[in-house]
Amino acid sequence: MPGIVSTRTPPPRLSVPSSDNQMRTTPGKSEPGSNSKLTSPSPIPKRTPSPSPSTSRAKPSPDLSSGKKKQTPDSAVVAKSVVNIDDSALDNSDLGPFLLKLARDTIASGDGSNKALDYAIRASKSFERCAVDGVPSLDLAMSLHVLAAIYCSLGRFEEAIPVLERALKVPDVSRGLDHALAAFSGYMQLGDTHSMVGQLDRSIECYKEGLKIQTEALGETDPRVAETCRYLAEAHVQAMQFDEAEKLCKQTLEIHRVHSTPASLEEAADRRLMALICEAKGDFESALEHLVLSSMAMIANGQDTEVAAVDVSIGNIYQSLCRFDEAVFSYQKALTVFKSSKGENHPSVASVYIRLADLYYKTGKVRESKSYCENALRIYSKPVPGTTQEEIASGLSEIAAIYESMNEPEEALKLLQKAMKLSEDKAGQQSSVAGIEARMGVMYYIVGRYAEALSSFENAVSKLRASGERKSAFFGVLLNQMGLACVQLFKIDEASELFEEARGILEQECGPCHQDTLGVYSNLAATYDAMGRIEDAIEILEYVLKLREEKLGTANPDFDDEKNRLTELLKEAGRSRNRKAKSLENLIDPNSKRSAKETTKRWGGLGFRI
Image 1 (cartoon, rainbow, N blue to C red):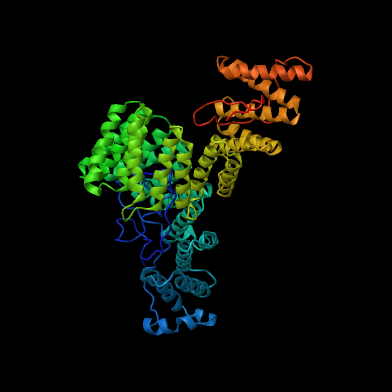
Image 2 (tube, one colour):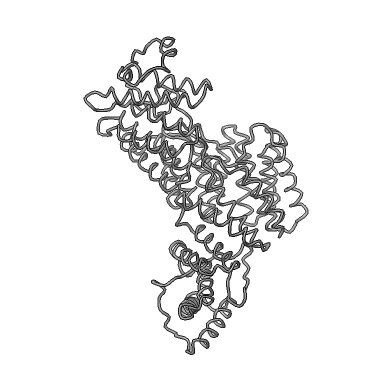
């Protein structure tokens, strides 16, 4: 499992556990193919241009072994008659293990997931019926884990979740390590499944429970605990909870310092994740330090391709620090390695072209920027075998952002539409698709296609609500943009509701003095003005002006605009300004996102802003 992560792409699908001895009762090295270590598919897959240097991490598996193999019926005999087995035969204690093995073998042979699903369902029923004194065995938990994995492979995630919740009721952690690790495995698999349907908050809660159980069973400094800490840190990164991610990553680094050799691959992977966290928090110098140390560890271990991937990340940091010449040098180093090791048409090469295109646009070299964009598009138009649709969609989305910066919204729209087609209907892609649709809405808005903009915003908001992402600053900004589209379509009542909801979110996430929050305040005041709620509009503008005068200063040109608007409203209301503005604790404070170019526009004198 990758140790470096990206917030751009969703998690991979669960695979059906196949080993009969994947949960171990004693610490130590895991057997080949075993899943005793800790984890399931990462909540955050690898960064497109840079495969991770970390060692392989196994999925939390439902498999538990009691140390003794049960005798099963003759395979040839049962295979012929298993289809005709009625429910009464499931009382045979030998049948459950055989049906479970048959389910795995069916998946492995490619005979069909539906047939394997039937075997797994009947295996679970048999284990449940054969419970001794009414107490289910860990074999039942194992079969339910397999059943849930098959549901996931069929895309039936909503059916997998209650199966895993049922499996969690089987183990009793007070009964020993077997039960503890079974519970751990169940929580991790349930977390993965929640992640696949975009429910990141629930996913993280499951991972936390799994980590707690594993820590109590194995100790705080066990290397397997470090792997789970990093796994949970990756989930926090995807949810943009960077402080929590940083704490866990530091814990992982500390454990690996104790148990691994200096400059190990494990430490290199940890430092790449830490660099990503530092970059997200704006601490570019620290991010650069971690990446350099990671690169040195990779070089010491002969991981040339991984060194190139780190060089791309180093280039990104240099670009953020405006050290453009050093960024170009890092990108070109990576490009040379990727071309020689992967081929000139590999998506890793395209990803470096995109980085160079972005850099050259920022330095005013538009012709060179477009040339690199075209080179990347050429690679994505004829992808080499092994290229995933997620990689192509991510690349197209990044190129679209560059065209958007070049003020070519129509070209950006075309690329975003292609990216959305590649991403929709894919497991775990809800948040990614929502992000693309939100960007499409902004592009439609810019070119004046307001009805299409509103439709895109509505689709994005619906997906984010379904995934539980209702409290992030991004969601608040999206609601503000959707409100502006409603204004353009003269749906003022809907706009006010959206601005009010955006206010509640952004004031909580960003604070009342943040530029986004102030923008929504202004939009809501303009909406109230349009609705004839003059007193409410006045109260909001008085509050905003008070914030600017006392905390932000009056040099911002928005201050004069808002002051003039307030003066006009006060004249209309026949009164003077109240210098002691009331708190908007119980009134609506809007939050808004300025446009991608941080510009301000006016509509009909009402003062709406994007």
